[in-house]
Length: 434
Image (cartoon, rainbow, N blue to C red; front, side, top):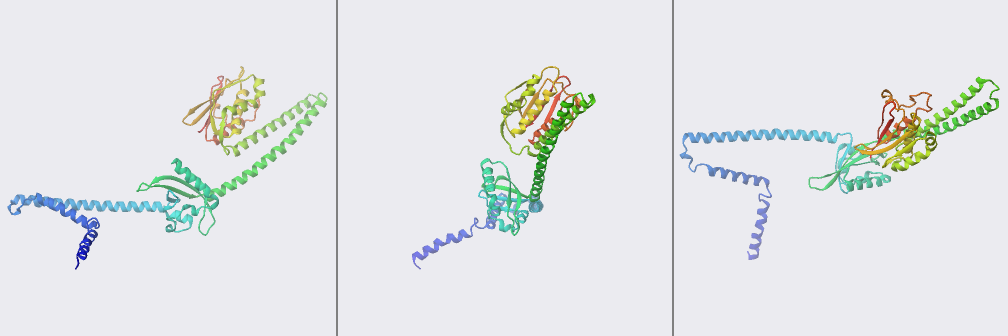
């Protein structure tokens, strides 16, 4: 055997030792650890056990028995704990897999790392076919941009995100899904995100049917408004012509009847217009939200109410108003009805109306305060009901204005109320979130 061969053989030995080393064999490592503990305990025992007295021997035996019992009790406790952990894990996986929604854990690049059985069922594939696949593979091509923007917003803000898009189910038509995502970290510290996916196809179908019905109703409302207004104008015009030509000729009663006819037709026209406005707010409110400068909306409102303000001698003032996320036209409707209401229900003095806003936990709280006749405490809860009028025919109106205000505010997610006492004016207040 050459020196080189001997060297090679000796050089290979550490490799074989490494393969059987404690680091490579956990069982061997445990054995070595146990032997070290045994040696440590043996070192504390007397060197010559034969020299132990009977009492010392009995004491040593007792300690060994107690230690053995302790180990058995610990083993039993560990066994029970293990059984509980396994039962808990089984319950967790049952809940996870049988949940009514799909659960996904995805990498930062959108690869599926984990998925429950419901997720696989939603997409019509096995769970193993999902893992390491990009979720985008199951998204309808037309909705890929929605998914991209959703993920981008999630990782840029770190905030939970929600979107609706269409997913492709194997061998079936695409379906609408609601996707809710949050970021998290895996055990290794890498960023992942978790997605909860629910099938909303039926809800979308109902929404579409409702939208179709509402569109038909809107068209009907437009047509009805036009078709009613035209004959009403004819009734008013021709009745007024008759009154002018035959005033005093047909008797005092006839003159009065014609005046009633004109008044009734004009009231119907006003009511139709008010109902149409209410319908428009109900159907359109909150659909096209954008930043609205409330100072500008108030200026537009005061321009619309210019005649009423001049005739009543009203003074309308305001503090600094914010910019809020709302619909411009609806906000003008809101200010116009509240200020118009203050002018209409004025007391003996000229109306003094002040509009202000303050920031609170609810968002912005607006106040339209006046010095009018006020509202009795028992009637405060009635003023926002549609067609509810507290003063009958004494003060003209349709009973729709404040109901419209309530609808506008609630469609934006706020609330409206009134604080008032009879003879001390009223303060109509409403909130706009944001």
